[in-house]
Image (cartoon, rainbow, N blue to C red):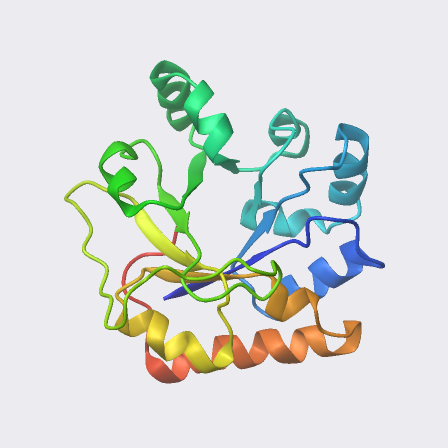
Length: 209
């Protein structure tokens, strides 16, 4: 089961240094999500990240920066996904880019065959969003339609419920609050704990995205 870290939506002190340290610690995939940041701010942040990590970064906003920085991954928000044409998505895939999106309704998996993976949330009660609560029933197990993308659990994922994410049959987990709500010096420690738990559970279940 692969682990993804999503950036804090607002600027973070020493953010690029923190991202570089997360990558150096072994993080395989980082999602850069800055919904309120302008193009210049996101470009400035990317310029401070070590270029050797660019192939592990998916960008949510300002997709034009992909070409400028040689990124390989594009994330489409639900709103953006509804506006992009099938032809455009096919061209993006044809250019060798890896695509992802987000959903809150699992019935939409049938319509996401152009994407490599998707986030589904909230799986647990959110750590970073007050009042954002899970709607999944006890004993939930993910059943993916044939041809659907990989599904990453998002929302309230932390060390203690990683085994539950695995038992729910998700392909991976995405975390945000459990990393960024920590003091700066503890973020790497928390990340390493999450990754170690995954290794101990032998919970990688398929090729990485």
